[in-house]
Length: 84
Image (cartoon, rainbow, N blue to C red):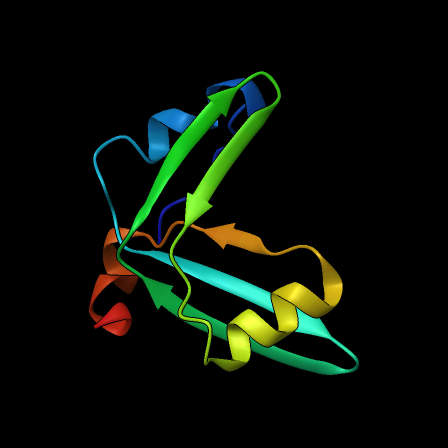
């Protein structure tokens, strides 16, 4: 497994520009979930913002709305098959 390198928040949009499948982690009320999302993109640079399409009838959407936050994970090449 490759070593993870930190990316400055202001430059993190570069990881999304090529349209990778991302993992959306969410948690609320003691429940947790991770989902694969094929539609994500940078929205703004300062402050950095992203858009992720999450169906309204999913647990992930419920948890994100409950907590008001989510974590966007970009899988490594070795993890790519797990996102299908």
